[in-house]
Image (cartoon, rainbow, N blue to C red; front, top):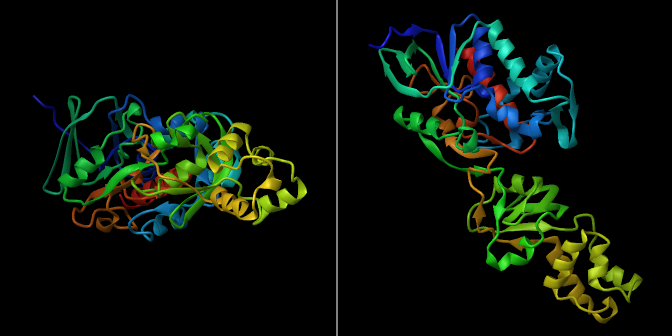
Length: 394
C-alpha cells in the first residue's frame, strides 16, 4: 500500500546546479521545496567540472555567449542574476577563487566547495532532498503534480524540470527531461552533442597520427570563430578551440583552421627573401610543433629550398595554412560532450519565470532548456540564472 503523499509548494527534479539554485532561492523565500535526483549524491556534474575545480562562471557572460533558437530568451535571467551575484555568494562562503584565461573563474580548492555551498544554502531554506532512487511515476491532475519515487510519494502545485540533457551518461545523464516535456506537450529543439571532440575520417589519417600535438589556432565554422588551443587526438580533433566550434558545426559541413593566426599576409614570401636556403619544413618548424610542421609541409608539397619555389606557390600555401579545411566525419557523441545543444523549446516558456505557458505550474531550467553556453563557465552561469529566476517565481 502506497503511503499518503507528502505535500510541498514545489518539487524540483534534478539536484544539479540549476535545480539546487532554484531550490535554495525558493526555500529561502519561505516555500516548502523537495528536490529529487536518481543519482546517489547531488551535484555530480559540478564535481567533475573544470578538472575538479569547477569553472563556476565567466566574468563576461552575456546573451552573445549562448546558442538558442531564440537568441533573446536568456536575456532576462542573465540580466537579473549576474556573475557578480554568484561571486558574492561564493565569497560569502569563504571560497577562494582565481581567474584563468578569458574571464573563466575557478575554485582555488575543489569543486566540492561549490556543492557544499549550494547544499548549505538549501539547508538555510529548509529544502528537503532525496537522492539515489529513480522516479517511478509522475501524474498531473486537479492542479497538482504527484511524484512517486522509491516507496514515497510527494505532491505539489509546481514541478521543475532540472534534470539536464543526455551529455556525459557515465554520471547518470539521460533524456528524461525531454520525455517529460513531450508528455506535457512541450516542443523540443533537436538535441545534439556540444562542446565535444570532432572525429576525422580515413582520408585525414595523417593528422590522426599527430595524437597529443597541440597548437594555438583560430577555428571557424560558418561565421563563428574561436582562438584557443586545438589538440590532435587518435580519433580527430579536440582542445578548447575545437570544443567551442563543435557547438556550431553541423554534420557534413567543413571547419577551417588558421594554424598561424599571427602571421601577416606575405610572410612566407618574406621568409624566402630572408632565408632563401631554408625549406618550408624548417620555416614552419620555427612557428609550430615539429610533428605538426612536418605534417603540414608534407601536405603542402613544398619540397626543396624556398629560393626554388615560385611566389605563387608560397602564397597558395599561406592561404591554405590560414584556412585549412577539415570535414569531420562526426563527433565523439554525448559520451564525451560536455553539454547539449537543443532541448526544451524556449517558445513554450516564459523568459521571466521559466514556466511553461501551456501548463501552469510546470517549469524547465538549466541544460534541459534550449540554451547552451560557450566553453568557459557560461553554462554554469545559465544554470544559476535560470534556477534563480525560477526560484523567484515558485
